[in-house]
Image 1 (cartoon, rainbow, N blue to C red):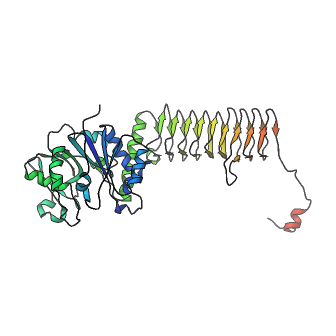
Image 2 (cartoon, helix red, strand yellow; image 1 turned 90 degrees about the horizontal axis):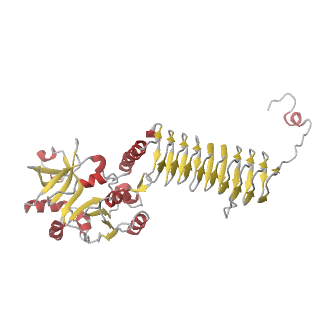
Image 3 (cartoon, rainbow, N blue to C red; image 1 turned 120 degrees about the vertical axis):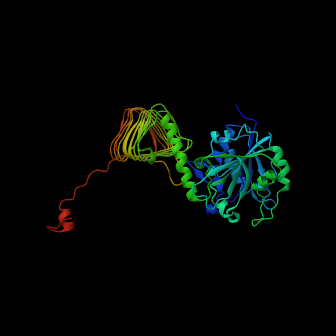
Length: 436
């Protein structure tokens, strides 16, 4: 059941510490933009999700609309009203309870958000207790309530000893925002409008400001490529645990890379070093060591070791062995043991693909299809020059180049240059007694 809560996600910043031309919230972890995870958690709770954008706003909006519908986007006037307080000035929440999240906190969860709900305080402020709070603003708590936030440069010796720091997520009653947002000033070193200034004003007016102690593993912000890597490891652990809890076997799970969109059904085994990407679906299958699956479907099959399924491949009841690459192809009941490239192909049940077989699907301008019927035996080192169509029950001899065209059933396709033997050539070339 959805909660009458408005969630505002701040996604307007440049993220200069990322040292990238890409907007910070569009950097990916586990195959999804950071902002995606904040929105996903919010949408599990409420129908009123507001995303504040500014820097590269067109790219941010387009990226999120690929995943979600029904979002509200608000553009911050970052020139005249920069900062977190300025971001909230153009927001019109639907509900009286307003939660402010950050788009660079991809580890936030539905459970994390629920902790802010059903609290009668005027403001609920997230707080993290750190062993080493150096560099962070300290949250001063008196009698169980937040009294103020002190930046480290302004903190006294006793205040610097405080280990409670601001996690950057707040729940406000709407009337609090309505009163104090117009009172914010940018009279500070950065000339920005800060939400944190509302805390001091609300405390002066005896409003109730409750601290909510949270875990860094869920409220960690991403401000650098190093932070991005740490967050991805945490998210990856969650994904792997979730699927193992459903029955997926993962061998040396810490070595397995997995993206958010990957799904499993039935009994699956994933060996060490596997990379599972995009919206791949694995059903009752065994993915062997160091194989890569990209945005493909694998049913009742085994893949690898060291195989590569490129996007839009579909395997069913199929064996793909080591060093086999499949791209945008559908294989049903096929065996391809090793060392083959199968691109833009459809191969039918009972067919066997010999080592070294390749589909020549690209002429430098266009891609062409290879269609292989049922019970086709393709010998080793065969080249299939697309467009080509092989009917059922055909044998193709090893070393054959099958040129474009259609081939009828119940035939042998054979293309070999006759062997030529030149007597005495070795001795003539290398000389008597010479070893090559």
